[in-house]
Length: 205
Image 1 (tube, rainbow, N blue to C red):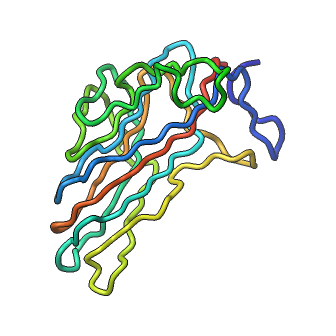
Image 2: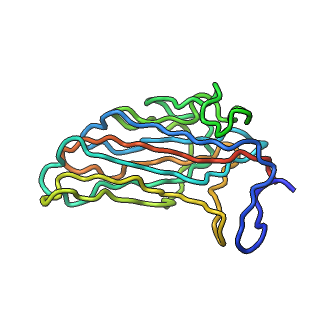
């Protein structure tokens, strides 16, 4: 049997694995008041599936956010479906040359050039897709000074799948994916954001 299944009450097995991958990137200096999609991950293959095991996000302010903001620095992860046209802008994180493989002998990722990208100083263009109405996860920055004008977000595992009871990865079929959005960027602050994604490519069950 191929695919993702429960082996026993304490272990999740992913069968028919083609390869395991890890990819990271960082934005440029995101300008003040920018909101929108900072990272996009699109799965293009209709015959195989992608199991996202981990998404890690880090943010660090470069300049102050001004007076104590009414809303915090806020990010969310949202699943996308019917993603028929890639997003635009930013920096393409290209795996077609073989980067991202956890072992050199593994096959090159099935991602195509442009499926994974990260913003530079402005939000990414959306492409053609449908976003879920509710986020998979939401995180906020932490004030690091007394006036709440400087915020950071330590490396945060927004999604984490382990081999333990009830854990299950985010499973993407063809033309599905996820985006990291900056939904609240208060005041005059500027910031850098980094993202890392750990995933498995496998035959569909």
